[in-house]
Figure 1 (cartoon, one colour):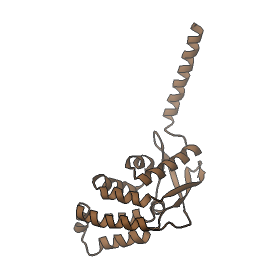
Figure 2 (cartoon, one colour; figure 1 turned 180 degrees about the vertical axis):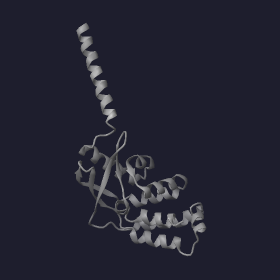
Figure 3 (cartoon, rainbow, N blue to C red; figure 1 turned 135 degrees about the vertical axis):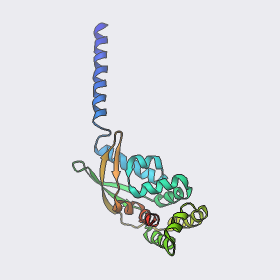
Figure 4 (cartoon, rainbow, N blue to C red; figure 1 turned 180 degrees about the horizontal axis):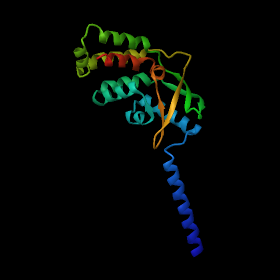
Length: 201
């Protein structure tokens, strides 16, 4: 009985030490399974425009700005869901040594729609007028609703775009780092166009 108790105690201590070491090593491992699972999580979060999950798994300056705006303006959440509704992301290759993953991304081609929208928003307006538009619910209701509707009609190209993104580790999970090229590919050009219309001032 005492021998069995000592053996159980030894197993518990070994387990505790193992868990302690894994916690100190810093979050999710850089395994192919974890990287693939992270990509799948991000794809689903983008489609649902799930801000909490996106902030946890994606590092993107543009996306961060849009998510901040969506917290106080639901029109940006509706726009986000429309942008990513047809998004598909596939893992092409994983380079664990260099901490990168190459992705094949398919989404609606929205660059022309977004560019026209940005031009109309900027044209003939001062810095102060542009800043005021972000708090003008009537403008957001009409302009973003129109943009959202136009995006929903955009077609999906046959050929996916290839991007390579860096992978970072947080304490609990992996994070994909989206640069401007990645943002353009994932959003079909919309995120950058909207960011341009916002950051001019």
